[in-house]
Length: 131
Image (cartoon, rainbow, N blue to C red):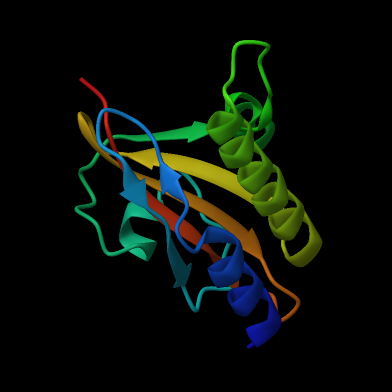
């Protein structure tokens, strides 16, 4: 297993929160899977209830709002956006075939997965509250 990707992801997400109605940290995950995650199997891969509703979100769409500076952003907002831009660069540098899944309703598990150099699917997991 490529430890470089996991180390880079841990460093890029340290102290970074995903903001929704609940701010949540990111957790680096390794699925030990070589099979690509899909809407049909991602809940099982992540050991979540298989009856959970799953939505696949385009990777670029998911990160668009998180990485786009706005004129009205304060300095602390700009610092968070820079962290997300750095995270996006790390994901693209270390992983291929990047996918984003939202699993569940209201209390949503978000998984950002890609394939590392060893062909394993690894990535990030966080929580979102969407009412």
